[in-house]
Image (cartoon, rainbow, N blue to C red; front, side, top):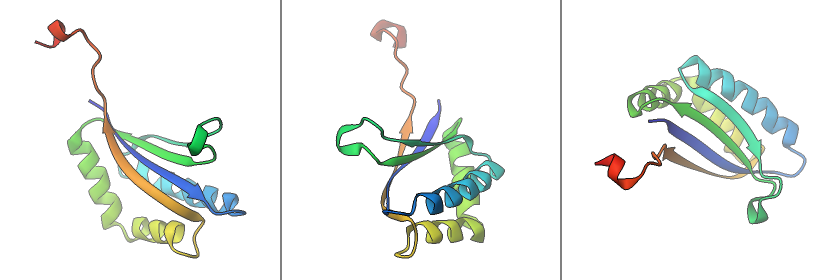
Length: 112
């Protein structure tokens, strides 16, 4: 079962390149502690979410997710990245983090 961390953000006007710089470092830091499939996507034709940016990374299990999260938050460089990105001086106007899991799509009788 994959565990996906998603962070939806709005970028401050004129700060796109600053965000990309932070995200390149974020990708490096997260992958160094075991995150997989790091992606940065932008809502293009997404109604109210148009223009939002989503960071996604994946872990194979809850245990892996915990190890990645613990290692990232234990590293002063990880905390520094979060501070660079989300303080009043940073490029992110708003953000919200969520965690999702894979849901198997099988007939009900196959799950029993």
